[in-house]
Length: 342
Image (tube, rainbow, N blue to C red; front, side, top):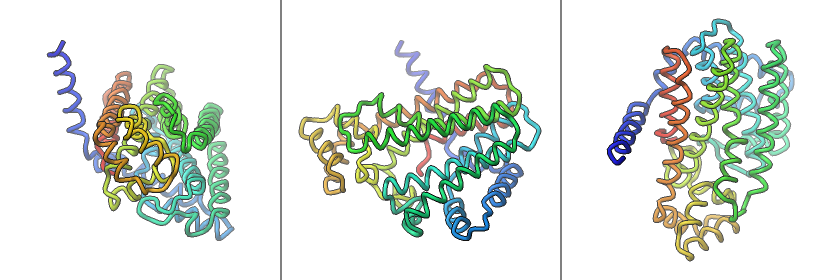
């Protein structure tokens, strides 16, 4: 048993060791597709209303990995799609994500994202919310243009679940009694659902089998969960200059993420009380003590191990796909979700 466990752990270490920098490979494989998606995004952002253009272009131009559009492209390519509708749907997925960011930053009163001032800081809350609505509605105009009812169903359902996730997160704000399962539900709804939809969309466009479609949906769900769990880790261990936000932002916003939940359940009574008080009270006055509790309880290692398990599950979901460079990149992307530093 020990020997088998050791071999499995070695296999997982090798998997993560070789997937540290897949983005350059992705950019080479998808260079033409990504240029087409970028053109689609720029063209579809056009509005006769100057403020709409200004705010939407600011947030879209703020960088980011565009993993969700990439997932649409890779899923379609891995299953043999040869049309161009995946460019439009990749842009749609990015627009839905962008709209959630605009709304999130208003709700969270965030001042910094990706190392830049948030749109609400520069343009005000009203402009951010209303332009977010514009980006949402433009996404639905585009998905209607694809002319596939299944696509509409997937994206409409995903958008609805994401909205539920936003409300769940709001309800759990400053809630020190949330358990791990409840928090993971928030992640599945708020973050992983769009990844799941992105994976499923590529499969639907390719006319894949129901089993392959479900496999790509599982891949996206596990990938998105791993991605968010690593965001939780980086909030207490990353370099602010690299991750583009301040350490402890989640704590300041009263978000009970997995490292805090673990620290409260596995720390001493004093450590648990410190984390609870900081989480419920807001602010960063106890950040040093909270980070000490997070480190001593192994909370970051625990959250990272959870993320690694999700990444492995994502990789295993690809077993039903035929061998291809696109499938290889999906494997690499699942490892990158965990090994990234920003």
